[in-house]
Image (tube, rainbow, N blue to C red; front, side):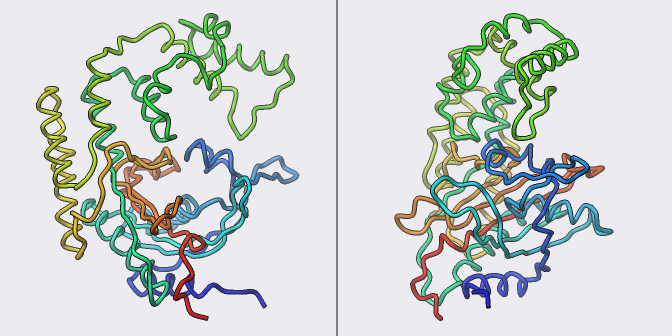
Length: 369
């Protein structure tokens, strides 16, 4: 008889009791739906293929499979709430590759700030319900949308915005992000050839180079994607007017942290000094704090960090994570990902926010039999 962790049972009972219907997508998933969710996740997939050549993987997380299930249902585009709890599979060096994940996803709510606050509060409540004597959690919040809006307001070229946004979500320093080269490797010869080339010619060149070398792209990256990355590097190498003043503003922004209300004041002052219009996204930030307080959470006990924007490419707004005392990895985390539904086939924008709880990262003290 298989062992069922009582913490998982308590968490899923709390989530379904809050009105989040349970959804359990198949463990075997089409690999392609995960390829653009973040570089870290792409490299952790357990891949396989069938006789037709179609690529599949063991479910590495729940958000994307639950979203795909929702988009295929009749309720797609309407308000819907789901919960889940089960095994996920990722390659993690030196650690077990199978672990249990629980969580919630909320789709289609136009009142985004209220939905953000509800997801955060419910995730914390469910974690506390996991055991009679729950450990206190330290909660960190951020806003990927605020960072994106800053980059837009600075009027950076799209390539720089993508590069900085992607690199920052991967935890890279600004120095590393702005340095030339591709993954620390000298590709100056290829970049010189591609500089000024169109996409069709660049893709043909990359396909020819891969064919000559007998290289098969790994991790699902196509020759077209590789060519696009080289084209971006060539354009950045050619220079695009990234000024020291704009870099200083980004550095100052990323240094803001602490009490969320005080952070809002600092960010508004920064925007005013730099003559940047961040009013709409900061108004949304403040509105979310009001809804968080309405959920019974004290905003002053949350730690805001402007540099914290989540570690997955699909986060577009509010992000959060919570750690037990002295724990290196978060026990829960989540955020808003409004652009992902259309990336996975939705015909129109759909508001989406969710949270995941990693059962194995919760201390067992007081967990019961």
